[in-house]
Length: 360
Image (cartoon, rainbow, N blue to C red; front, side):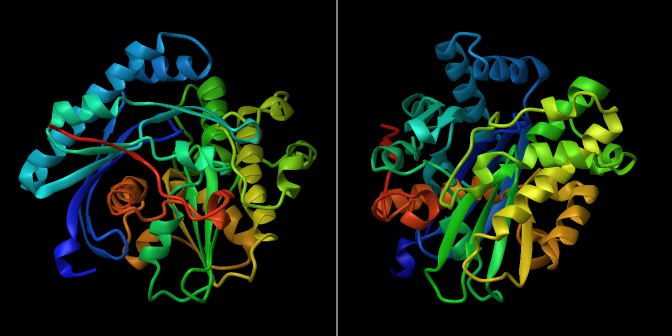
């Protein structure tokens, strides 16, 4: 593609950690990345976070929460534009991920909330939404969806490498030595179980820096129970719902030992996933909130026996990466390029997707 095909896009992400909305600017032609721009995160207030969590548990009116979610995203777009100095007319498209409230790939079910048409009207910019449905319709798992962006960023880096995203769920993108070699799958829990545990037992939103886990001891029998799940033996591609695992095996532990054991579970799940890599990796680059958990990062380095570093080590922004990915995918959708591959979601063939909502 010529330089004329490069355009600015905004990506929006509301992830399984239920913490807020990430928004990021990206300039791309849908294949290479010319420039990354400003990125911001706007946290959800406690009341709305509770509404989202209730919806995941089958409570609340989805239509009302969907509208509220969409209007909150619209305000984040306005805030990003104000802070960036870019004009609305300079943005070609907004990639609107929405929020996943049901993900049962074995049943072929994927449900997200987020009104793309309303967002386009509110912000006055074309919007691409509903990225995952076509993948599921074509036999894919509908996740993970950032791997093609990871591969685009990794051009020029020493490979094989893995990009490990530790949000609510953990997922990896294995990138091979040759261009086009990409394998992706969910490894298991990311931060979700740890967050749920410390919220219930310590009244904390999350285990800051892994401090609570650092004072506990891993209960090896409970960890073995957690790792006995058949999911870990399934070959990839494969994906998970945020609530696929429960904290029941650690119920009798102290809050410190429970945090340590669940942190070890996340690390052990990633290590189990490494058995599925086509070739051993030379480094592991970690994005998502989990990279701030020093206890988890140390456990990962110990189990993977390879350098484990935050993505900032190669100049990427781990707080913006997922939002940037949906800006990138929105441009790819407009170009009719694949968003998922058989090796990333299990879809039958390289598949595009997304639904375009015109602003006017």
